[in-house]
Image (tube, helix red, strand yellow):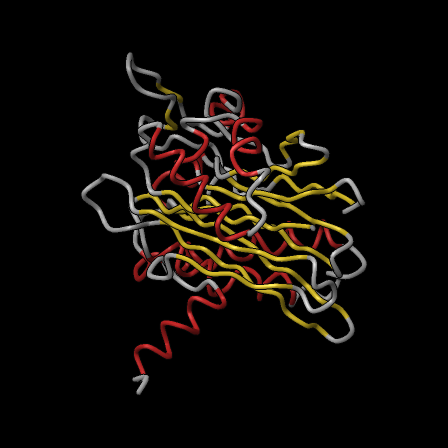
Length: 283
């Protein structure tokens, strides 16, 4: 007999809720050839897992939306968990989502960040990066991101990066214009105010005045040459480039197996960070 905890675990796995769901998969109802799978792995740090994954297909009136996201927390489980529960709802509740999609996503990101800051007493002083992908009727893809989790698309075996890595070095002038500073000590990465290794993020109330929560947003048409997309936290990108990630999984036909294979390769390359991967395949 299946008990309540087992049922809840299966539901979480199906829709990709929470870092406790280590693996999951799903498929489109609009196109049976479009599938997704995800996998996560805890890093070697002493803190709890701070990555959260969301992956599901959702029917909205006459449209199907594939909703995929990775939220990579820093000094926080609460902020990425809040994003997992709220960000897509905030995006889809924007009245202009269907007609002015980019501006609606930007506005929803800002509103979500404001709400996180307002609830900092409960959510804590930490923050989270985010990369989100919305697949509209298996025909158009909208990617938005803050921070260094990344989205790439593969066409004819070639990788193309869709997101922007928001690194402190590349945004140093903007950070300094806001009154902040960027440090880079030997053996370390560049950090905002000597603390945060990304220039844009949700949350981080103590240094928010020096950070941006404005996402980069891009659109892609899904054509016959599109093979798959990968969303992954920076634990992948620390040890491999975009083309290496594509080459690792291009011959793995099942999406969840592809996500797992990518993580295993990153671990073989001695990645020590938390890792989350979503693969969406267009067969």
